Image (cartoon, rainbow, N blue to C red; front, top):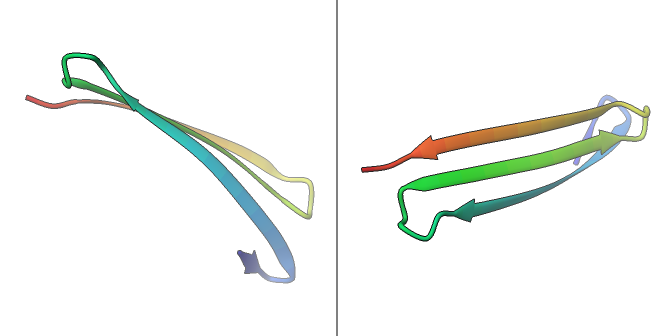
Length: 46
């Protein structure tokens, strides 16, 4: 993706627990202006 003359890329993973109740997600991102970010999420479903 690009925004204001900068290009970026993101990579993420997600997993669900064996019992199907917990979901964990994570991602990292970076752009051509050497800015980085991370994201983490945890969810519970019933």
